[in-house]
Length: 459
Image 1 (cartoon, rainbow, N blue to C red):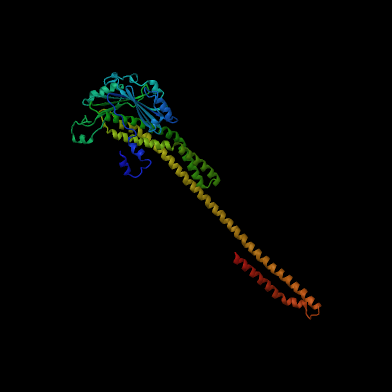
Image 2: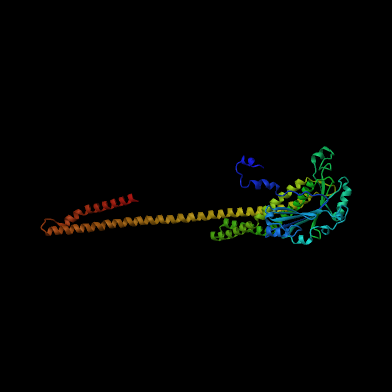
């Protein structure tokens, strides 16, 4: 792309290139058949990219491999006679070793020894950092799909004579409905392009075995897509099932918590316990539920996501049943669906339990609020009665104060009158003081009222 073209655009968003290239982040390999794919998926918790890089560096010719080359979470390495594809995901890392199918493992062989024909050493597989979650030996070989009976007999022999799960892949419902039989590139069978067969059983070497049979003109690109879908399907199935043991382990706790919550609600309804006792019990139950939610909510969410991916990969296979067998999708769904329903039910019970605890907490809080309001009302009533008594006492004290002040004023007037009489003024002090009593009482009372009025204005 020229600089002149770039200059015609506004500046790129910081994530534009990363998001644009995400669609090409994990391209499917081009696989030339007949091929053998040794696939191992390991949980990568606690395993760094540096550790995985160090292990990949032990492959032939990869001494110069640097951790920076693993930054995109995808790497394809070419070694002598085989390729290794490394993919790192959030919870697991996948290693795919692709090589030519050994001659003694061709169609017609009886349970061929695939590990003995591997070009990568068994020690290298054993030392992959992490814990194995999926391991598959996928053989892809050529054969015409015309004689289904003969082909099935050879596949049963190759896989060990046990009951098989098999599908015709790339089923074209349109062609089936029209009854046409055409030959075009990539569609060598009138209704589908290949067979996929497996047993979904662990062998003595720890691997599952899958067999893909396709016509000779199947392209490497199509073979790569088929292998990728089948291997992803099995990996996502196992990752989805990781939520099942968690759901089963929580069954007892959820039942106990539901019973405890019902008991708390009954005691709350019957008012058979104090608010503090109920609150302590409810807080303990809520803390337990929140702890379980924090510990396992990711596992439940991941299970839902992996189950969705399983369903998508099954749809992408476009299966058609081979007479006398069960399709891969039917086999998976009949066994996976109950497990996923159990996980979904446990997750929903946990969410529902948390919501019910919140509602019970609201009810208890409402009861406490009402009790508090009643107590506040009673306190206000007591305060009101106290204020009324205080006002009465204040009025009584005021009356006494007016009388006392008036008494002292009249006493002063009496002494003044006596002084004037002693000075020769013709006055009767007692009569004068008695006559001034109403005036003094009114004056003191009036002065008190004015003081009250001023205080009232200031307040």
